[in-house]
Image (cartoon, rainbow, N blue to C red; front, side, top):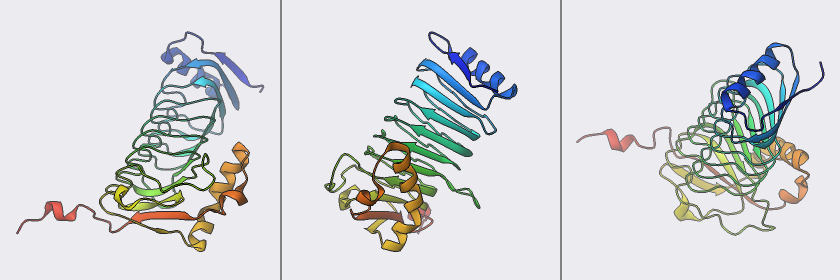
Length: 248
């Protein structure tokens, strides 16, 4: 079946998503959405092996609850792409807004440029499902907040040798998962329950597959990136706020 093209120009998000669901139900393996401008919920809850290309700027909750499809955005994305995503892949050729990968529980999100606040908040992991968020640029405050599992990698591609990263509340309340940041991280930026140490060669090798995938997608040199040191941030304990709920 040839690729299905849908012109979203001036269309409300409800009929647009109805057309996407109909195309998937009819057996489409590839869907191209043209002239997208802020329509929400694209790809939400979809199941299967369909590829959706978004030409324009999708609205919030792109790929929410999605299980299997691949979404490629030829531009920026609004807030919370990958929200509670179960499996599949979202590739954003630009920046994305706040809460990118919110509560993500499986699959991969690759953002070429920057993301907003609270990226990876509440990411979680169960058995063999491990959500992956790779950020090519920088993130704003509270990256990895309340993280319960999964992996965040921030490459900071705009800087040849990055200065120490300074955004407050990194990994605040983290109790699972890990974060790799290219370069050093200022101590004052760390949130409650997190610890930062230089990544060992073995630790970096364990996530190199995702860095390589990112570079292949966006045309970067993996070897050049890996010449820089990385910082690994992980939880201190599984109960970072345990002392908040005890009485003497």
